[in-house]
Length: 177
Image 1 (cartoon, rainbow, N blue to C red):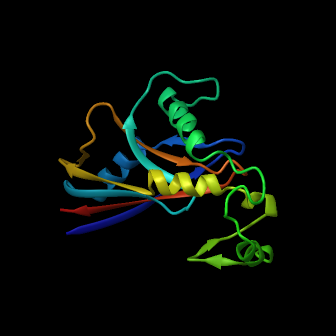
Image 2 (image 1 turned 30 degrees about the vertical axis):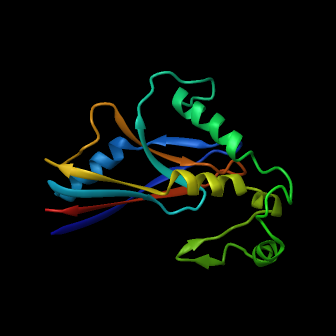
């Protein structure tokens, strides 16, 4: 059995959710793995991000989002409106705010640098909730060294946090023979 892992590096934008269509990267990683039969898991390493599987939509809005992504944004805005003020949601609570006040570039958690540039960046509760609702990973069957996603299925990564741009990581694990 082969286990192959790789990382897709992305850079999100500030001001709105940032979508990335990563299907070709996933196909490339499967091909590089040498696995012809098995599974491929695609996972976010961030709590305000999601990985999802959706039909590719040829129409895009003025911001460059596919219409189905714009529909998703509008639906999620109704469920979890953007966090604009302290106490709009329970999170971030006073203990959390105190815990992150002193964090700098030197603070680490599971090997990733934590940087909170300002307390206002903590007003991203809707991003955490959207990440939880949509999910952080997807697993695909691999047959003939190809993810079984059909002709119109695509793999997407989204950073829901609109407060700042950041470098993001997507981990891909391919397991099989």
